[in-house]
Length: 74
Image (tube, rainbow, N blue to C red; front, side):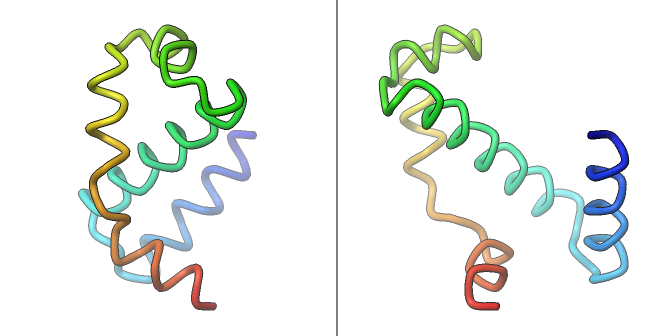
């Protein structure tokens, strides 16, 4: 898994993706995957993440980053 992550990070660095944008995108995808694993149950996902369910909802209501829109269009 570390090799896959390292490869993705290298691709982002070479593509000129700023750290803040990469961090936000990673966090959003991570949260979405945990939520998906809990079949959309915000309370269960938040408990696994160690955050309040309102914090999870707030993080997910932020519009997807420019990086995501570009990658989905490809």
